[in-house]
Length: 373
Image (tube, rainbow, N blue to C red; front, side, top):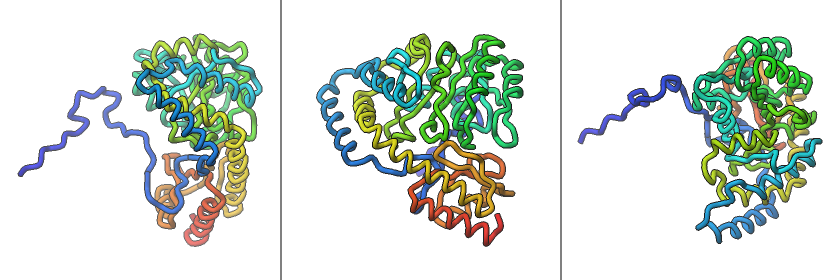
């Protein structure tokens, strides 16, 4: 019996800007040490798991009803967390939550981007910014970084003045390079964005809890076109939860509600996130351990002879390699999965447990000794 022919995506009447593109994703391979997706390596503590079960059980009795459409309790607790840790008081009206920070970004681009509008980001940076822009019909513009992967305020401001984007993305700490952006630079870019035309500036702080410095949340004061985006995937060890949120002027929260899907956050998601927020102090204790391990990776990689980018995230970019993918494969042969995400001559390793980091460093030293990578 003849097998039916499998059609290609290009056989479909797909939008022109999506043709030839690849979906976002990192290899999911069964290896002893997986350090390629910036996950928190520590499982949730047993008391929190028990509390999640309690809250989800309570929510289950009402699953025949739609969840709280506006996630009032969750947004209130997120505002309390931000006010406590971010050195700037925010209220529920300043906060919006969605299914991961990616949906937050998508909603922002649906509200402020779209056909005939543009978004600008400084690459290399988080590749989902450009992918989501493309998915919302927003034209993407790549702005400049220095050879050290930092932002030159004057060059970045010139790019904004030249292109007059509707949305500007600033990722700090930056993924995949790990370096942070000073508050003074963000202020300069915000002013440039307002001078060109009133534009939204989105500060993506997915990794801010791992930073040596502070959140840029206080910059929201008096800046109605500034947004700070966050996630519970990293610091809260809840990548499987898919909960992201933003802080901004209440008018921005009103705007994204125009494009959010009805009842977009399930009752189970809200219950789980609320349970995690009850255990903030414990979870941030794991963050302190990961920050110490991250700094150890930087020190040991440099001692082994690698070039390492300064990191304020829970990962480290290192190199420099003539063939980064070949080195990625060499690590994989030694049972260690790191990330090759296209930055020329560099690889990225997530911070794992001390045992996982030891295995990675052993492989890194062996490669340097055996192959002089």
